[in-house]
Image (tube, rainbow, N blue to C red; front, side):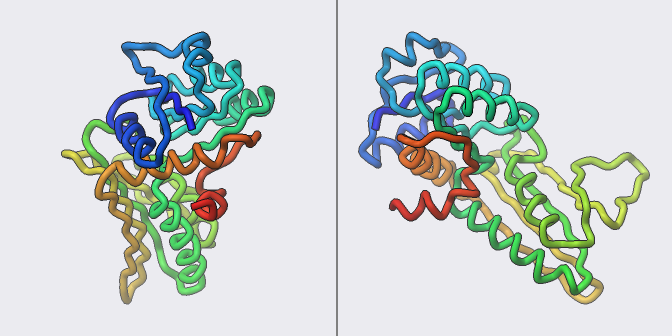
Length: 246
């Protein structure tokens, strides 16, 4: 498989290593110093692109992939407001696209565990919260993974109807609201905790990423899966199919 990297920062380097380990070839690397163009993307001979760039670059990168008629895997976060526009571009160009707030297989299994746990505690009167921690250089908050976790909790915990990431000073959180708290410090790769609280006890579920390596391997797995397909997919919704190929 020939891969074009849209974004060649820390994650781009991790994807390069994961791709080589899987026997694939990186045929193009684009970043803020070497901008992607349609001609460069076509001339690279890539049959899939992997995007770990910046939120503001995602629409442009998808437009280039659409014009070049190659599928794309998007691991960049913080562009949720553009999802509908990206989906339309993908559908109109009839290319394949996989997006993910987190390409770690473990995180996606964690999402399923949280969804099931939320259903189990719903009838027992538990309150809930989400806390996420990342390195101080991460620009978006809450993390995309925390937002997906909030969806998982809300799908099962009937006492909660919405999630928020901020409170006004002096404001108590309403009973039907799930609070997502964010920490940015040091070099934390990524830690996500979902807690359930009652008057009698506490239950905590935590996922800790040890390195970016798992994210890179998941993105390469998604790239292998999307080649030859059309349509817009979320990694967490297709995780079972993607893992079946391994």
